[in-house]
Length: 371
Image 1 (cartoon, helix red, strand yellow):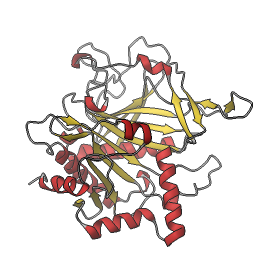
Image 2 (cartoon, helix red, strand yellow; image 1 turned 90 degrees about the horizontal axis):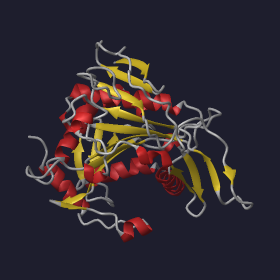
Image 3 (spheres, one colour; image 1 turned 90 degrees about the vertical axis):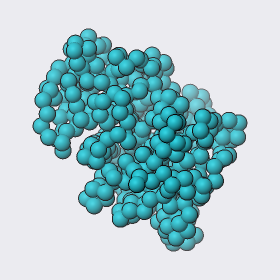
Image 4 (spheres, helix red, strand yellow; image 1 turned 45 degrees about the vertical axis):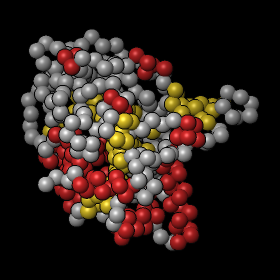
């Protein structure tokens, strides 16, 4: 992998990832851009003990531009975009409208009782462009390009984890208008959070309680139990296993684990890295076949769940060694032409109601395997 770092006209970092030397990586961004100004802050919810990002500047972000005005396409024929080169393999750049940006700062209280805490919305948000082809999707990539994306995710995880104040790195992709995507070009994002996310906090508490009760690792025991049961296993490869979880929240939801437990992408071994592209591309292609050939591409969210980083003093995070890297892939489409909306029970109380039995979802995902 060849990595080339440069700067955009407003000072944001742009990084090209290539499998070989490619021309144009020294292309200059000639757009007359002002320096990015953010107003991000995080506020603490004392009832739920979680942080919320408040980002008024994101109201002005780009929203469903026509294809010929896509900011993620290469700069060609006199049209200037976020990527100055005329072509690229994988490109990563700082988001122009980040939810989190800048160095960490102390939390301050607005009230005498210390209930209303706020802090700078520190961290970093990046955009990952998987291909220069505007009309493609991740599932259209070949295995070499998917491997390059994995290398980029891994490199960004390592670099962002080392930033002051960053506590967790989340690499993810939102695909489809139904999900809320505002740019049609195939891309994902990376968030470097200044706190451990609520979902990960809950996982770590469950892992600690299970270890205290049984002496075992909850992630390992779940994977072993799903493999032993077999009904919900979708794909079982030499170094990876994918299954629909026993209590899936979403109509079609798959969790992908490496067989050897590791805390994050940087710890994957060479064998798992080599096998990942074929496994992941097969899962994405099956998702696009769930509802039949006449249905539009399946909207989905895919995200890597990684262990929290260590605190700034360099000591290991207490639950890091027990965490298991895994990818969660799910769609909000529950059947042909119908979406799963988060209504009263889900949005109001956090209690999901799933219309598709996980065993039926797994069976369907096995039926649409590539021949």
